[in-house]
Amino acid sequence: MKKTILLSGLFLCVSALCAACRPTAEPPGSDATVAIMDEVRAGTPLDEMLRMLDERLVAAMGGAMEGSATDDFTRAEAITDRLLEARMPFEWLTADQYSVESRLRQVQSSADRILAQIQTGVAADTVAQNLRELREDVVRLRETIARGGTPAPVPVDRLLAGDSSDVVDNPATSGAAAAPAARADTTPRPIGSPVSTGGF
Image (tube, rainbow, N blue to C red; front, side, top):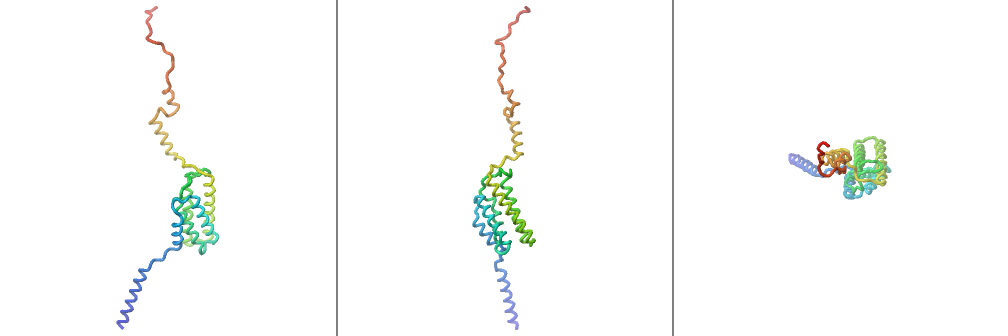
């Protein structure tokens, strides 16, 4: 009897140790995230990344965020994590007068919010609406980028600081106020010293 109890206790200990050593289950969507990280490399052109993102969002919407559609959104969210690593065509959106980086951060924020809603069990209608809005934002961003852009303008505070330093350090180049000082005096003057007339 004692031997049976001892063997039973030993079996339970071994089972517990095996359970502790068993790998922890990966979170849902982790395979999809790893696949995207392998597929989307840093330096990928931005428009290509946005195209891939749009395709994943459309697939997630088509599947009503159920089954494999959840993986499609997980892949989309993983793409947004790498948007700032893309090769940017320019820094400033001419049509919107807005920073490309700021637009990309907005897309990232929206995707993160939707993922949090899915994980916390927010109503499906709310998630679907936010998903549609995110996709619309991505489409608009691609259209705006296609219209062209420029380098980012110099921030106003730097411009002001630059103007102040120019006036202080280089007064001769500060504009019209310095021009008279630099102009040569061309007024006619007599040659030599005046001769005294002795009162005549």
